[in-house]
Image (cartoon, rainbow, N blue to C red; front, side, top):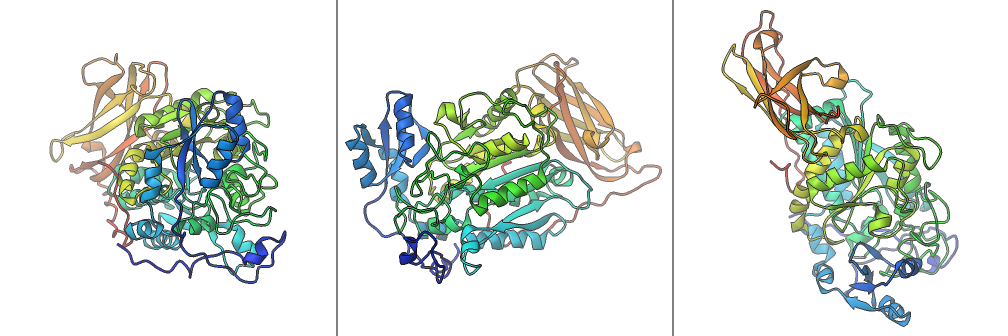
Length: 574
């Protein structure tokens, strides 16, 4: 466990007198002490009869959760909010199981147990960049609202980590993973850091991590709302950033029903609205959309970064689909509810790429066990969200994962949540070259090799499965030595182990001749195709060739790198 550093030395807030002013003068930040002990917040069920009542609740700007029951919405409330709802005629019933997680949490204990603070997260990214300079690069992509408003005397830089083997030239497809745009959703940052650790510590040791960093560019932004996150570290249920210049007289310290700031996941410049359903024009509401699209520097900087990484692959009209050859994928990690959400959020109408977005969402849900759905249909409408912007503006296959079952998830649960979500994140990285097309094809599972000894052929074997991709029979499989198919690799046809390709699951085999391959360790890429002609993503394995070719060109093994000193709770499953 790490020693607890003083939160007072880190924190930010404005003078109480300045909060009431439309344009406060930033003369000194006001630290907030950890949330005082008093009446605990409560998660309640608000029973609804129809969509009209759902819309009326959304109009109140409540702190609704990303999970619900068949005839009720769940909301995080205080006594004032519960009284208001009951006065309005709603049946409001405490949910004891959901509320239990609130009662267990204390911010100080959680960060002492293992959660990374904002400062520790930045330090961790810097350590990764220092230890793996050929694989990792820190990128300062903007400033937080408080840093700008305070004249750089407080607030934060906005940091992302670019991960790729810079010795392999690009351009490369991009997978963008972001977390903690809602400050209180603590588990999301830990998952993002775990994925970083898997990639850099796995390079040269794990074939999947190795080929992904060689041939892809992976960006991780673990805290996209750092100002708000500092308040969450003290136990406040801060969701938004800390912008207090949009009017209103909001509570200080922040309460569940009333707090300054803009909801950055309602502030995107696509699908933006400050009217219900989906957002609020009340500056004190948890879902306040801001005064205008991308009004917040955190959101504007994020959109600028994404524009620099992804080409615009979709037409200008709402109904224009992205081509199925479009590159790139984005996942925004949220908590909680155990959901995989895909566009659109602001309407129940289908997105132009609805079929492939749903296929991808269903595939992620196959791996993590969550429910895959369109938020406007399975939860409630949302507007100005990151995934709607990424898909709506650039055509990126974009998704939200609602992980875990609490905002302030006990740290002991992080290992389980990582184990659940690692396969889905790995799959997302694999399909980044053409997610809309690759999701239609079969998966390659457990590629392995068997060597009979020096000078003997190396047998490559894998399982090709279409179970989660439509149950189509497998029609073909291929292996590629060192160079993947999209980079000009030469295919080696693999055969069905039972003699015929005729089932949704096939074991495939093929032999690599050591007479044609330099001695040493090599990457082999394997992929499969179904009867409808859809190739799936590759999986990779290392093979050791021990024979001596006529003109040997040894391939040295990658250097094993020291592990990071800052703790990451788990390594990759398996």
